[in-house]
Image (tube, rainbow, N blue to C red):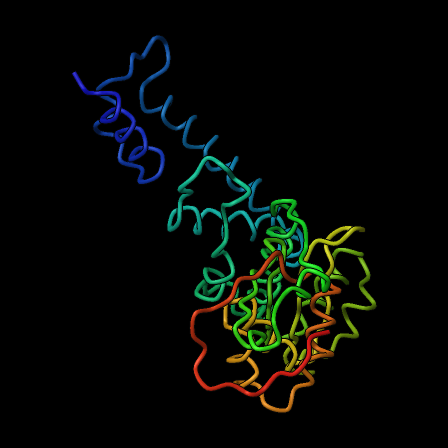
Amino acid sequence: MLSLRELQDAVRRSIVDRDDVDAMAHIVADGIAPRERLSVYRNTFAQTLIRALRLSYPAVDRLVGVEFFDVAARGFIAQQPPRSSYLDEFGGDFAGFLERFAPAASVPYLPDVARLEWAVSRALHAADTPVLTIASLRSVDAADYARIRFVRHPSVSMVRTGYPADLIWHAVLMDDDAALAAIDLSCGPACLMVQRGIPGVEVDRVDETVWRFARALCSGCPLGSALDDHPGIDATTALAGLLRQGCFAGFSLASHTGPVQPLTELP
C-alpha cells in the first residue's frame, strides 16, 4: 500500500512526466480504463496552465495566434511545471523559454514583449503596500544620506528590452494594426519602469541613466554607492521623481557603504 505522499508523487509523474506505470496500478477502472482517466487529468492540468499563461501574456498570444501559443505553452509546461498552486506566480520564465524556442526565432521581439507582460502581471498581483513618501525621509540625518537603502515597492519592476516592447505591447492590445506596422524595430533599447498606480498598471519609459540608477536603488544598493556608480546624475531631481512615482515602499540605513560622493540634500 502506497502512502499518500507516494501516491501523489506517482500521479505527478503521470501528469507531468507522462509516466503512468506507478499511478495506473492504483486506479480503479470502474468503466473507464486507468490510462484514460489519467489522460483526462493530464489534459485538464495542461489546459488550466495554458489558460493561466494566456491571461499573463495576452499580447504574446495575439502576436503568434492560438495554435502557436498553445504549442509554446505546452513546451514550457513540460520544462517548468508549476511549483505552487497559486497560478498567478506561474510563468515567470516564459520569456526565457521563448528565447530558446526555435519556432519563435522569426518573431525576435517576442521574448521582450513577454518580459514586459510578466512585469505587468506582477504589478497587477502585487501586495497593496503603501509607498514611501518624501516626508518619511526628513528624519534622516544629513550625515546618513549615503547610507539610505531603499526597499522596492512590490509592484515595481525595472525592465530593459532590446526592442520597443512597450510600443508593440500597447499597439497589440489596442488592436491598432497601423501603429504596430509603423513601429521601427531598430529604434534602440527601451528602459521601462512598470508599476501599479491609481488608474492601473503604468508602463513608463525612463532615461537610461535614471533607469540604471533606479534599478540599483531597487536592488538594495545604498544611495551613496549608487551615486558613485552613476556619476553626473542629478541625484536630487532623479530621486524626487522616483519618490513621486511611488517606486519605494520603505528604507533602512546600511551599516557600511564604502567611499561615496558627498550628498548634501534630499528632495
